[in-house]
Each structure stands twice: as structure tokens, then as C-alpha cells.
Length: 237
Ligand code: ATP
Image 1: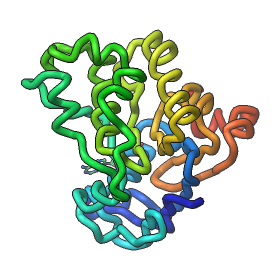
Image 2: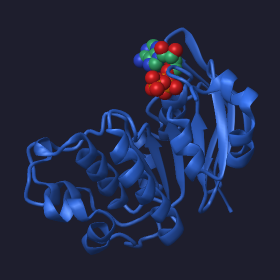
Image 3: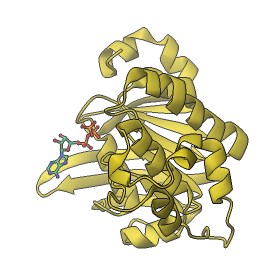
């Protein structure tokens, strides 16, 4: 089932025309990667979907409904969970409170994520549950941001640059396995914006290559992985 469809959106910051007819699709249960170098337009695409920087033209459909005119809180309520690049956890309250403050039922009234389940996938957060958010390392904060968003029981998770600022061994030994098991064991659907193409292509079913605010190429991860010319042109591999 198609869960998200972005249909030829054009997004501006003031007079700067950033996204040019960007289209993409996410099927339920998939991981879809938005790839591209710094400044390619990945964050702007996610912000456009969330209604944080609404597109001036084109459509965004989530579970078949037009959402391009919805406010960010309405978009979140419909079941889109956004994990921003700057993480934005609450620094002065405990890990446990960060998680429980976020908890809400899904758009269809279910609670798929409990604290118990979160601790199963994020054992580090159970260990640190009484620590304040500000005392966590970068990697631990990234885990908390993802976990907190899962506590809102989203139908689709938008992850913006989850590898940013993390040590390579955290990315490879913790984050990769975590995202893989969220998909394989929990069926979480993810749109993943990331400069780290190797990380993304190891996880995603399908990838979109963005450059200069436009989709230049899209294909299965296997096809992108085996296409050296495309990688040289659009990715920093
Ligand atoms: P990054 O990895 O740096 O986040 P990105 O692919 O996510 O890169 P965007 O952040 O979407 O790229 O930026 C796309 C373009 O929009 C860039 O040219 C950037 O300079 C410009 N841009 C981003 N934010 C703003 C803003 N608030 N005002 C004006 N221009 C902006």
C-alpha cells in the first residue's frame, strides 16, 4: 500500500526556489532513502512533507489524504513522526520523562509502542532512564530522539541525517542494526534522508538521488550500489 506520495512539489525559502518538482513514493513497510550531498534539498523535502516549510505548489498525500496545507501538528497527528537533524530532546528532564511526555496513541487509536518495547530495542535508554537528556552522548541522544518519536506511534517515520555527528562505530554497530530491526521485526516504514550513502543503501529498498533541489535518479538500492557513474555524480562515495 502506498503510504506517502509527494507529487511535483515546489518549495521556496523566500525568493529562493529550492525544490523543483520533487516527486517520490513510499510503500508501507519500506525504507526509502533520500540521498544527496550537503545542500541537495533533503531536509527541505522532509520539512515540506511535515508542513514546516509548506510547498507552494504540488501535492503531498499521506494515506491517500492531501496534507500539503496542514499545519505541522496536524501532520503529526495524522501519523507522521519527524526526527529532526538537531534532535531537540528536552535537556532538563530525564530520559524516562522524555519518553513518557511524547507518548500518544496512533492516528487509528492504537498503541504499538510501550516503554517495555522501547527498552527492548534501546537497552541503553533503560540503563540511562534517570539521567537528564543533556547528559547523554550524541549517540545516546540520537537513540532517544528516535525512541521518543516512536512513542507517538507514527505510521511513517521521517529520519533526517541520523548519522550526523556520530562516531563511525556507533553508526555501524548500533544505528544500522537498530533501523534494520525496526523494519524487519516491527514493520516500521521509514523515509531516511542521509548523506552517508553507504549506510542508507545497506538499509533501503529504494533510493532517490537529489541534487540542486531536484530528483535526478531513482532506483532500487542494489541498482544504485552497482552504478558507479551515478554514485560519482551525485554521492560522496
Ligand atoms: P544538509 O545535509 O546540509 O541538511 P540538505 O540536502 O538537507 O543538506 P537542505 O538543507 O534542504 O539540503 O538545503 C537545500 C538548499 O536550501 C541549500 O541550497 C540551502 O542553502 C538552502 N536553504 C536551506 N535552509 C534555508 C533557509 N532557511 N533559508 C534560505 N535557504 C535555505
